[in-house]
Amino acid sequence: MKHKEKFLAFRAKYSDPTLSVMAVLLALMIFVLTPIQATVGIVFLPLGAIMVIVMGIGLFILAARWIVLIPIALAAVMHFALGFLRAENDPIHPHIYLLASLWLTLSATFAIVVARAVFADGPVTTHRIVGAILLYLLVALIFASLYLFVGAAFPGAFDNLVIADRPQLGADVIYFSLTTLTSVGYGDVVPIHPIARSLCNLESICGQLFPAILLARLVSLHVAETTEESD
Image 1 (cartoon, rainbow, N blue to C red):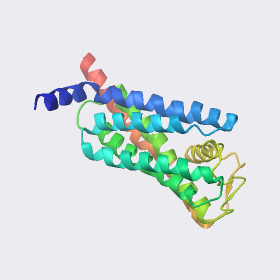
Image 2 (image 1 turned 180 degrees about the vertical axis):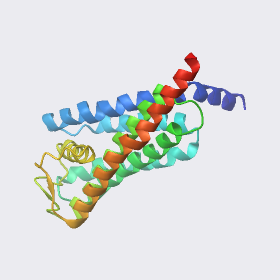
Image 3 (image 1 turned 30 degrees about the vertical axis):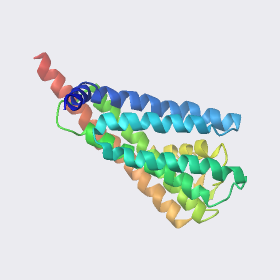
Image 4 (image 1 turned 60 degrees about the vertical axis):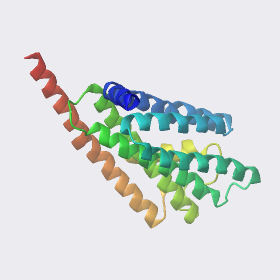
């Protein structure tokens, strides 16, 4: 019981800062490590395993429930299974579905836990606002995994986006997802299949509503609470 009480006290103190740490790590993965992997042309499997472990620790601190480790363990199994399948040197193989499942499992689990932490009872701290930004990035990853499913199921679903297991795939799909989420739409990658277009429409709507409603609401609450404390 003492260990449980110590952990709950630790969680109460570091739950919000964990949101900021996880946001920094995810941003590092998306904007630094993934482009480096695409540039070098090598898939770093140990790096993926480390990220799964770190994300698992962060999720456990945020959720304080052992059940969140089940999807993390499942993701770890899929990660190592993917490593064995890649030895077949067949880039357009059904294990694209395994890669998409891995991304979706991690992103969706992470998004649910982060959302519960961000919108939990209590003061809206700066860490929670950063956590909302983390949630925004996770939405992009969720849609990126869905694009993998669509691209694998319907070859040619995207123009100028090759859905094949290659070092550049992560950077390409995340780039397309983020440009769709933020409604930048450079036009270099175009959805062709109706399902792909529908997903892009849904992501662009989420991308507009999230900052305008949820993120803006959190910032306004934080400013109001800060003003009350100063008075």
